[in-house]
Image: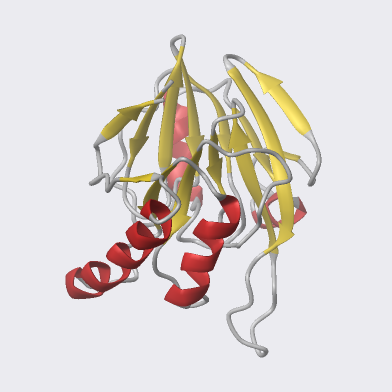
Length: 210
């Protein structure tokens, strides 16, 4: 399974000629979406999906199925989004998708808390969306948020420790300056390596084989 990180929270996952897209948001420089069998949108915020990005996916792969929590179904009503819930498993193409969580992390008491689901792909890679959801199953590789309006780096470190993945790489970095990323990322690295895990940074367009 090949995982390619793009800007912010977008991941493209390839296996057996099938492509899975997670969170094609507003910061994304669109890649080639041909071969997409599924799109997972963790929640409704624009940095995780936009109508324009979703149309680009469907232009390249018209048969792609789209999955998201109820909030995404409501926000993306012009598209055929299939609602998924925590505890649900979906088999599609070369992928097994397991969904966890339910709610976005709190930004502020004045801002509504929206639906959010993390997704575990092929029992290997977990993308939590905007949450500190800890799956009740082992996670080999964690895509860990490193910067966000709702994120405190100490809590992000605790999250990495709680998940206990053997491999961790940072996502959700576009809210940080270069200097800010340089401060935050080493903190996640420390939380990873002190448990004996491997930490690595993927620039947009870089890939890893899992």
